[in-house]
Image 1 (tube, one colour):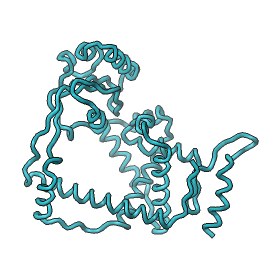
Image 2 (cartoon, one colour):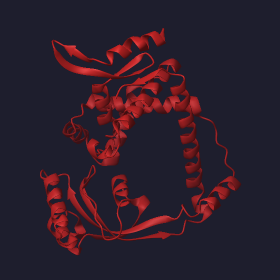
Image 3 (spheres, helix red, strand yellow):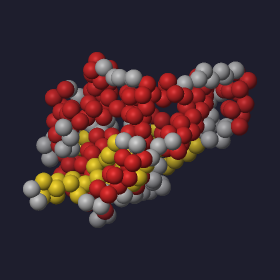
Image 4 (cartoon, one colour):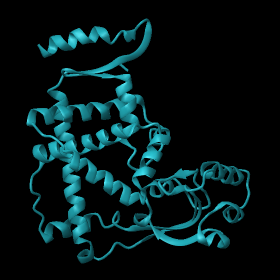
Length: 308
């Protein structure tokens, strides 16, 4: 019956959904007894990566639409498993995550909704994305959870084998920051970036445009560890070589441009100081491996047809 349903819908993939002669949507995939429309895919792309308020265009730059579809298919498979396992997410659980996002980004409820509005995201869609994320965690906890027992000997063996990659990167950087509280923040950040592209010295642009207290000193914030940077800056700096600067990086605080002056690697912390982090890292790696295996099994057992 499921196969028949899939074959029946397959014919619909050739045609958009039409109302009164106007094209309103089209089916882009079938996953077991569920269909995925282009509008659903577009909404998923908008909502899935908004907890950090990263622009959708920036986040998916360089990715193919099939990559986006694969992520959506995985999410739909997880939802289907949740129905089978009778797992649900309460409103209180969703509200707790929303409150945590506001605390992490130092914003009020009104500011969060305003930010989402700027990104053309309905607040309900945003909370449904969070609900889906929690549901995913519950399904995976039920399906792949297993106690990973790690002795000190196991941790030490891992530490010795990964000593080189456990070395921490440190960067000396200059920083332009335009506060998101300003109405013309984005325009100011883009103007600063244009001047840098035209060859104006970074220090001069800092003094003219940056809202940081150290702007008068040219924006030099000294040496910082990679792990201490907020995620968006961490991603931006890994593309730089000494002497180069980033594009405009948007965060919940405002707009940033960073210039890498120097970089170095420092020795890993002593084993005893890293034991807890090593345990978390190993458990995460094991969870990632089990997750991939679980998704592969779900895919193998499902009828999936993608038409984009």
